[in-house]
Image 1: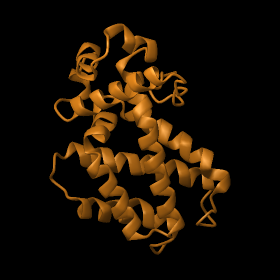
Image 2 (image 1 turned 30 degrees about the vertical axis):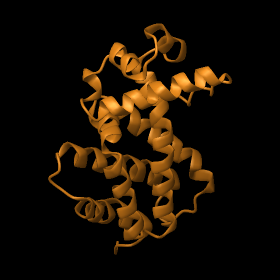
Image 3 (image 1 turned 45 degrees about the vertical axis):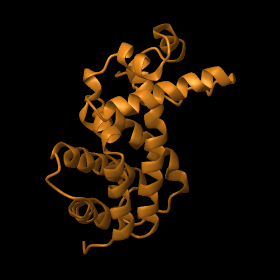
Image 4 (image 1 turned 60 degrees about the vertical axis):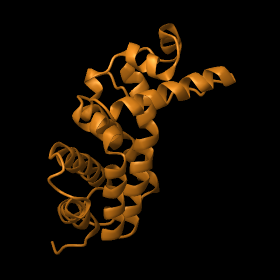
Length: 194
């Protein structure tokens, strides 16, 4: 069984100093991701950029992957909220484009999550969280078991986004939104003829 960097978000610290340290570490990691891929970063670089001690890092996180997972928890929730909105809008292209625009605006983080070795864990976590929403979702297609629709829709969405990020700017937001909508969203919402 693979260990997930995306375990439930760690409890928020109660002490203001601990909160400042976590914010500094998160900010430092995000700033460093603008400069280099995640797998090239070290804990020492993160703490130096954050202005915290090396030992302070380990009082909050066991690994740099755990820090990335903590940051990613909010991003996955945001992306999932956008995805469920797309399904509720009966495959609205505008919602699909908004999802792609969000990933594009946060592409350094999503690059780290989907192309830096954590892709399968992010995909698994995205599907797990989507399944947690399943009791609240209405089935769009009579012939499709809802759990299978979630598995396919969530997994395929992550796969398309990961593919896009690997293309290094070859496709713009509108191109990918059209691909994602026609390949994944419209078939799941009954937007295409069966």
